[in-house]
Amino acid sequence: MNAGSDNAVVFPGGRRQALPVRLAIFSAVAVAAGLLLSLCVAGQASAQAVDGLDQGTEISSHPKKKIHGPSRKGGTYVARLLIGTAVRRRPGRGKNVWFARTHTKWSGAGQRLMVLDSRRARGETWLKVRLPIRPNNAAGWIPRDRVQLAHSRRFILVDTSRRLLRVYRNGRVVTRHKVVVGAPSTPTPVGLFALHDRVKQANPNDFVGSWILTLTAHSRQLRRFDGGDGLVAFHGRGGASFLDPLGSARSHGCIRMNNSRIASLAKAMMGTAVRVQR
Image (cartoon, rainbow, N blue to C red; front, side, top):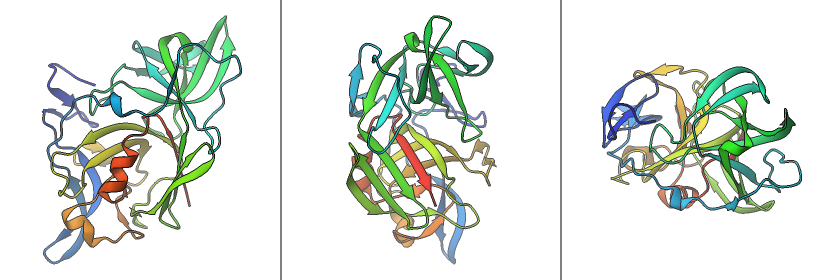
């Protein structure tokens, strides 16, 4: 979400900086005497929208059948906000739980939310969507006519006990590789999340590598860190992060992978489901 001017970004926790921005992500950082858990700061990043990377099928009209939540075989339905809208606790009624803007906070790209369910109420079709706020299972309902529906054939599964990431397409595994997950004291949260935003990094050799892909997940242990929320993300590897081998549990909750892998994952549609399990 832009605030004030077109070249400013409001960070979780209320900090406001001019672009290019420096994104704060939780990771294990190597220092002279050894490894200490610290805040990882990415290289300078552009805030230009990258919606052109999204891989999926746009749906111009509402499907006749009910929209179900994401699955390995069925992939993910995604709602792109056409206009800002209040998110209701119940379809067609109830308290407003959030306001969904048309663009994301970090990159300024079009906001896409994972669809969990659909329902008719008061003469309208409503979509239940996952929200990028605390708690990690936050969800609410938005009118179907406020969004453009799309479908991604992908479903991402992260197994923290095996330190393994798998990408499913039409129910079949198309990518499988080892990753770095959260340390025992700051574990990667488990649950059903979604890809939410992405920023390509100016220097792929910095700690977080070539891309940061934020999730709708937040750390349960680190509610506040360096003035911001404990946002969890996928990101690449570079510099000192190579000291933490793939298949280890040494981050503050983020999921790290090689730059070639994160570059491929960055092509997925934002809003694609990410299931994290133990």
